[in-house]
Amino acid sequence: MANAAKDGDTVIIKKYANRRLYNTRTSSYITLDHLAQMVKENIEFKVLDAKTGADLTHTILTQIIMEEEASGEQMLPTSFLRQLIAMYGNSMQALLPSYLEASMEHFRENQVKLRKAIEESIGANPLAQIAQRNMELFKAATAAFVPGAVQAAEAEKNGATHADDELAALRRQMADMQQKLDQLSR
Image 1: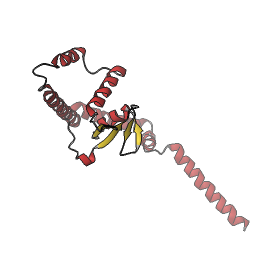
Image 2 (image 1 turned 90 degrees about the vertical axis):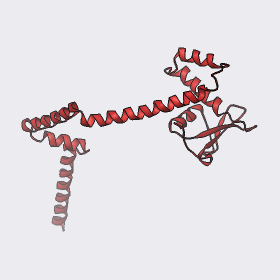
Image 3 (image 1 turned 60 degrees about the vertical axis):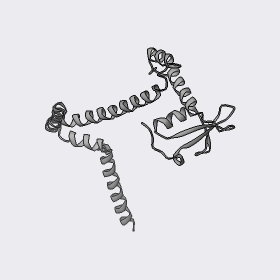
Image 4 (image 1 turned 90 degrees about the horizontal axis):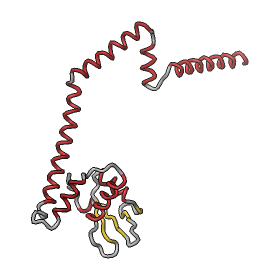
């Protein structure tokens, strides 16, 4: 999904000869992990060589992918990588970047649609409604057999337990007794 950020919104990252990356917006050195997180948060950035000003963004993004593939669960199948390598020098090489970009955009759109459809279907799902009704019946049965259990569970859910209520009542009683003792001592 392309970010429609203006150049003023693009974070400039400078890469120094010692391979260190410097975020000019936060005035701090960062790692490739930081850049990967920025990608996930859809923060637009550009990596420039500190000495020459050459744009190194593509190289750095490729390096992030290589590190992710080497350290985590591999996402790119070997057959895909072989086909991708075979496309270099091919007459179709110029078309591949726009095709891959469009494919990824469609994948993201479908992912959002699927997530939304799942969320909407849960509300209209008869099984979810039955589960909700069963929970209500269970609460009613619990209340009938163990008086106060439902209220205690709800109080605990809201952060206030029965013990907290008892402690607060004891404190009030102690304060009342202290007040009466003070009145008697006068």
